[in-house]
Length: 106
Image 1: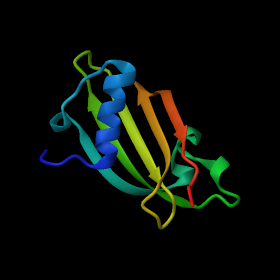
Image 2: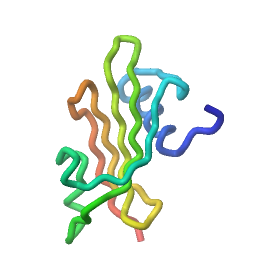
Image 3: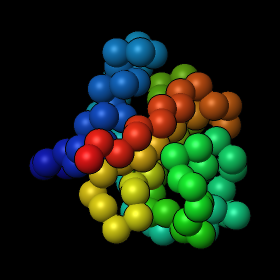
Image 4: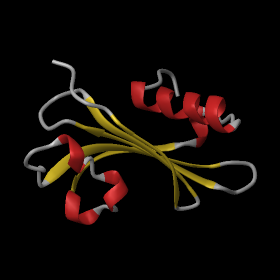
């Protein structure tokens, strides 16, 4: 992978610094997708940020298995119609291990 996206760089750096898991960008799968909030687990919905929760959000989903065969999933959700992040989530083997809400700075 020639150039890391901001989202992928955050995910790999967070795994390295917080969880002592060092992975290569070449080992990950990345997908940007718009998901209905009824399609995702509640930990992936930053409901506390919105007076009226939107029906969908754009997510960048990052998936990788480490050497121990643990599955790590990172997700960054974006504010509607903006490039700003509203949520960062990391799971390990389906268990939520990190969730950051990011209020919009005006």
